[in-house]
Image 1: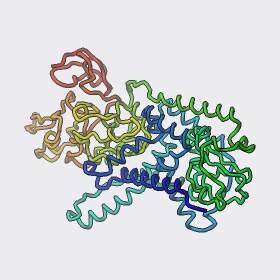
Image 2: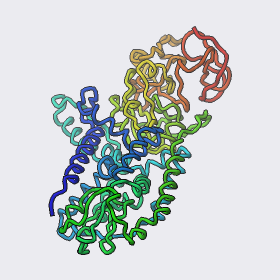
Image 3: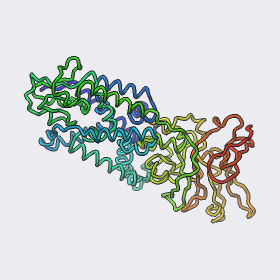
Image 4: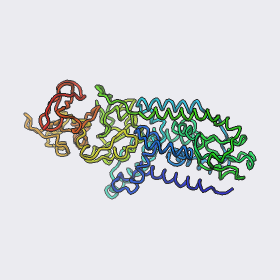
Length: 543
């Protein structure tokens, strides 16, 4: 038994990819501008199957499918971070005892579960229900485990040191979302226990990506082959196969479940297993039992390609929403009627159709304003990114969330376009303002507004109160964050169902905040007349 060079290369490449993606999500210090690994790690997030499908990235999908057609499911053993995480758990399980190291055995494929989950996922993708897809997307699950589950442990240590050391530690305490952390730990427990007990059981029984690539790998040019002249049916390879896809009694390997880890090659004491091109593999009678006849395999392959093709048009028509989810702010008893989605999300419909809840945007947000939604969007948007202005505010020139989003849920915007994207508007409540309650001068909201949408206006009582020019307000939330009123901010941001910017209004087309006719007088958006908070088109002029 000699070490196989392919296995060494696979382990090295998988470790590098895993570490880079983990660091990308953890992002110590959040100082992405000086993060030397960001330029290397960020592209890896776009080489994930489900985000590529949601983003309709045809080039990426073609490359991944071609790699699978050539070499089998190397994506699952190298590029998929959740798969590599399960391999790590498997290594720990094997180290725990000799019995655990040889705990596997051949299992017949659970076709009804595999194809059922794949078909359901394809339907959800085509229907644009990204929130449900996030529950089975291996990349999204990994992102939530790392950011929402493991990162809070580091945050807890940071909080403790910040409290104990104070300014000398130079880090302010960071609020931890224990709801998101609890969900992440449940996901970690499910995948961890599954890997500890059954190796790649999740990948070969439930993961839609594994099922799709498994069907493609039936036609791959390179496959595992067992030399019947050398094999003595000792079963060592079968007991070491974490995919449970080797049947030593019939000398066959199920290519649809093999993740090309090369463990079996190293395990075989007789050198009977090799990784070779299909034209050098002699056909076996038992192959029909595992992989089906040639025609059946081709039909399954074409069917899987049809499912993949049907999954590509994941973009639904963007429509105006007249109703919004009613939610309550976690920090205060104040109820925000309309959630605020990040700039680049285009609309709530677009966000919910594309987002896989990987939380990479949340991990990269330097303003701390992006947080995983719990009830803000309703059930459709659980765990999708939402603006929480009690945590921070959207930096005026920051475009990181769109730059790192791998699924196209948040489109990339340049700084100027981002400044002209209207995601919501500020609403002032005089009863809560410290000028009214404490008889003091303030003006914090006006002083900090980057769009100059707030000005202090004298009132009849001799005091000056903020007045919001909604045609200028972009909804960044800085005013809400800096408002000194307690326990509830006197000014808050209400979101829009559909975002828009000045460059897409058209010739003379005005947008009013409300139903009815809009009127442009000077710059920006005109105020519409009518009820509601949707956008209304109207005639107007722009200077």
